[in-house]
Length: 260
Image 1 (tube, helix red, strand yellow):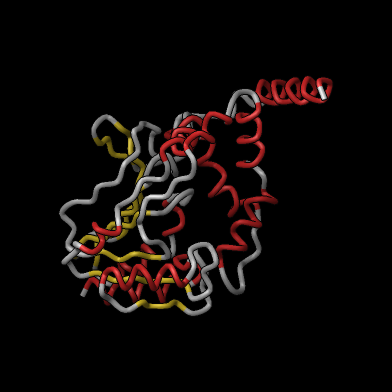
Image 2: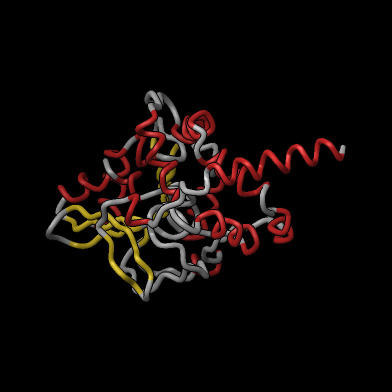
């Protein structure tokens, strides 16, 4: 056992040293645009130059790239569309603490997620120690095999061929400086979100839209969220958890109905 422990430790150390130069500043991995908010460099994308604004916020590990088909469709329907990378994902600078407290919205659409906070036992973060955590993080976050499996599970029916160029859109943000430490911080405190009481207090126009084949956040979870908001659940046929990629036109139509 001691020999195995020493061998694994030395292998992890060697791998960490060999890959130590892979992390880069966010603006070295993404050409922008960026805006500085409260000292943090925030990455975003935009479509459209006129009309009412729509802000698109991705979930865990979802960069703004996931909106690349949906954004232009909403812009064509006369909206100014902004997609923001919420740290510690995408290309926004990693500066905690990570919280979510929405204010001043005129309408809310929950797409394949309930916006509730989520977290496991915080003590698990203490198990994520160097050199093992660093090595495992770098191996898993750059594995085309793993990322393609996760995407295939989240896409729904008829996923496209997952070539490296597509997979890199999800893998590359994990190379942003500080991401490994930020994810460890999330493991300790959980993924931020709102409470069910916050959802019930919403009085602005709202909608809950869900991929009918979502097996990441179940349709049952979508129904529970819709009940909390006192709205019907809108299902997107032939779509899984990434409905904005699987069926962008159908999702755009659902958002447009909520915005009108």
